Image (cartoon, rainbow, N blue to C red):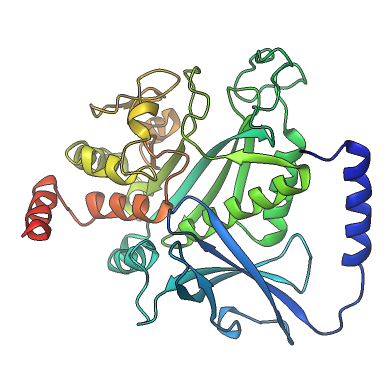
Length: 370
């Protein structure tokens, strides 16, 4: 049950008192890691007696995986803490098992390896994270007491009769800026309590790190508002609209004069590896996207690859401005809201830059099956 507004206000005033207490030279460091399911985040906090100057100053710690087994938390990227403020830190970590091997459910290290192979291409990424806000009662924010949704707004709408949750979106935006997350923008989406934020432009592995931390900050902000941010692809089954995490991708050649030919060549390669990409573009190996990618609500078909200029109903879109300029980036609209960014980035690079094909995928399946 949610606290009544007057109790929630008192609760925040009491919290502010304790956070204002002096703490000397100590620094609180919150370790953040992705759980075994690759959808949710976990965290725990410890005290350091000096402010860390960089990631190397933060010691490894321990956490637990889904089987309650102990794992080592290896810090990989540090951010400022927007909740307890400087000098406190948020630290994204990899999980490593007792043999110092990254756990099988954590694909970051494999993505790092691939990004190192293609660093000469200077791969840039941006991701557009959609989410829907729900109350603690499980009902979407903005639904009337009789169970009907209030007037459905439109993307980037303005007005209390068209959307709700702006305070949450803007609080998240400001918290990300304070933390040092490379947040690019935010806007309302088609459903009454659906929002989006964009992260990027980031080069290489940085994209995945910043998106995961932006998600963590979103959930923490929602705690303060006593609401839940859902990254489910289609939490409202009766709606045609769903939630995605479209990814923008480019290389140095694509961004240079005449880069459109490199964009079109990359898209041709993507068209030949459609099924492989869908297998990693949501948290459940395609099981979520098959219900999301229906060809309705600005989505493409799950079963068939498509591409066009300035269209939002295709698998991969070339923005109109990119077509006119002859260079830039393309947008892969297939990743779901609950995707893990590391496999998504890795698949794009393998297909577009390393020339991995469907035949290679089949050979790997045979090797694994033997």
